[in-house]
Amino acid sequence: MLLEKNLEKKNNKYMVGFDLGDRDAQISFCSVQQKEAETLPAVAGTRQYNIPVMLCKRKGTKQWIYGREALRMAQDGEGIFVDDLFSGAIEGKRVVIEGEEYEILTLLTLFVKKCFGLFSTIVSLDRIEMLMFTAREPESRVAAVIEQVVGALDLRNAKVFFQNHEESYYYYLLHQTPEFRQSGSVILDFEEMLRAYRLEWNRRTTPVVSFVTEKECAGCVQPYWADEETEKKRQMEELDEKVLENVIDVFQNKAVGSVFLIGSGFQENWADRTLQYICRGRRVFKGNNLYSKGAAYGAMEKFCPTKEGKEYTFLGKEKLKTNIGLQVLREGKEVYLPLLDAGINWYEAVCEKEFYLESGNGYQVMLTPLTNVFPEKEAAGKYPVRYEKVELSGLPPRPDTAVRLRISMRMDQAENLYVKTEDLGFGEVYPSSGIAWERKIVL
Image (tube, rainbow, N blue to C red):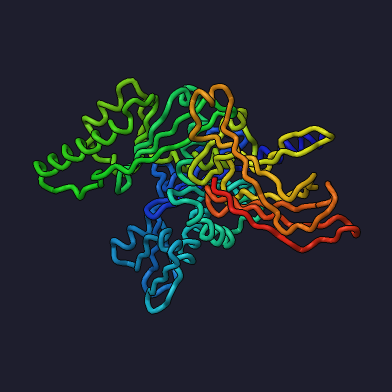
């Protein structure tokens, strides 16, 4: 009976993905029972998923309007609008409206709160178990903003996470049918400037490692279309040529089975030659809710990992790409003790353990990288192990195994590992010297 009650409680929870940018926001959600992510329409009964990231203060009042209605109000001159909320919050900007100063972060929080008010018409907010924010920016720029925004929301039961667009792309494909993972995939993201993201799967590793390479396509910028038809046609042909040149460079000598066209840059029908090229033997999709769905799927994997989630791992820019551990004696046998596993976010990579030093005045940290490995070595399961010695200079002389150490690890970016070692002494016989050693290891 207890198991059934817990299962019912689990099935009642929702995983939510919130895609947040400067121009638009979007909410997708799924649950244990509803495994396929669904996107919240900004306008009921439509496929208009994008919520303009904008607030408008009605003139002479304290009333704030958000999204599409804010855009309409600003165009009609009924209020004072504020946009660029996301970048403004990250940069700590302020704005003065009708003689009163506001922090942009406060206004972004108000915008997000109003978005969740819209979501609450579909699902009660106390049923949100996992909330995953996603954005193009890396976590290091976004974390503090997201933390403050969420702190002002009434989401007492939700666990909050962040992942960038690249990882949302990975989780989206992970939750599609298996053929999407048989070969590489490309997103052409055309929002102001065209960016190409190519996601590949390295099946020579266990688990299968997935990674994304990004290309900013030079010269491929959304134009202001001319009113005169002949000039507009010339603009379209010129853009088509530039985009095709970049796309060929991204696709060349690569197995690409699926292509996703995302962003307002693809709204106009200018890409005749580009589409002819990318549609040859590939599945091509056009839409704008991939990232928010991928965020919802990422939240689902944290709540209830799938079989695929255990068989695959993603190594993005924010991920630790090296397994880190120690060789230790356990019951007389030398064994490998993992401390930090590749695939976790570097900013979540922390650990603390206590050990006895068998002998000497140092120990070695064992590093096993999972990227930039020669394929023939990888195929044989032979990864290039590297050892980094941690010297404990000044350690008071003691008998073997009479040195107790606390070893803690942290990172300040994806390549920098900091190892702190503290002398804890050995009971009353050998009190702690109080010495601590710090060592930086570049991965």
